[in-house]
Picture 1 (cartoon, helix red, strand yellow):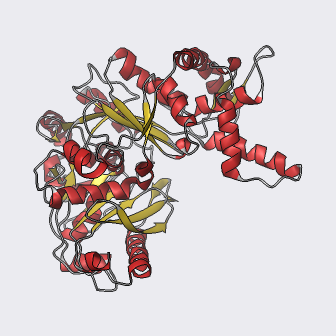
Picture 2 (cartoon, rainbow, N blue to C red):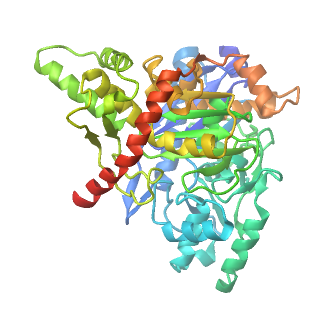
Picture 3 (cartoon, helix red, strand yellow):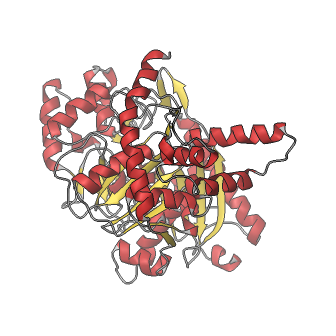
Length: 530
């Protein structure tokens, strides 16, 4: 492996997540051989969530240095050359620059919700659901606010697009990340021309010197060369000065796209569910939906296929809090607690409970949950039961497992029941699936679909973007992305699959009807507890 790395054949993927920047180095079999990471946190500045430019570069450089340290420790060598590099990051948000390449206002992340007026107006104009976090919502909100900086915009991009631009000099964006700026036309694999035209006409009275395509990055699809590492970029990435320029890049992508790649879910009629602190599902569609739905965001795969995304703000946080309470009670009795064992016993015991949770009800809303109800901008975690419900530990744990994916069920029911889309395979990844078989079985019941979990799903988005970089330089057979992943990366491995049982499906369906009716309780709690 030392000779492999020293000869410059390894491929690097770096992803900027919300709490961690991660780097993964892969070999010619697409297997991770070294890793690096850097922890960081967003800051609330003037009421908006941001990461400073200094924090972005300090984080990137520390993450890369940590990777180099791992390589040195394992293989006794330095990284001087690479076969390819890929950059990915959390999608959406707002980064706008002037003609001197200076950022005009602090980076506004996907987490900000100050764009309600803009998103609502654009959704109506486009007849398409435009989420609060999308880049076009941020831009138009600045216009509505008459922000002085808007007239000076020369370039607007995402976090991944910004880092890629600084390392390569190329103002480009992968189609998946671009679909979080303004909707993409799956036929042209670029920004929807009709919507771009409508937006330009909408803002024409402002008299700006730019139109949308003047300031947005060029869209690229997976497999296209997206530039090379410049000498200046090499110094920004590797402060030691050992990394050489000239390394090819794949298009920068968003974390949703790299998650699809890492779970081999880019083919039409496949999908993936990420379930941890928050949850989201990504289902790759064969055709567009019949109409827009507020709970469903439309994005694309890295090769431009249309994807229906259901994004939920909450998932396992409330469930984890209850497990923590049981840990406290056991420690109070003098028992030493192994958390993996505790989760395993509680989760598996939940499977012995009633399929409908015995009438119990739980809401995991630590924060607001607009997919459940657009008025729920705040949340209240809540457990509800009547005197006649079957209240025991198995049902209690089962209802909190159900509650962790209740909102995901509501969003996907639109796709499965109203739009009647077909799904061949869904892959799950994230903390909910750590206890083998339990989270899978619950999700299978909720979606009435087989759920697979792969060992490699834990490698995450940094591995996913490294695979996209490999696709640029190693796709000698000129395969499409789905076939390349099937043959070169996953080699037919679809993971361990669990199919839903009729009893579980019927039980979850009964539970979700009670859940929908009980949302009124959640709304009342928000209104009456300040």
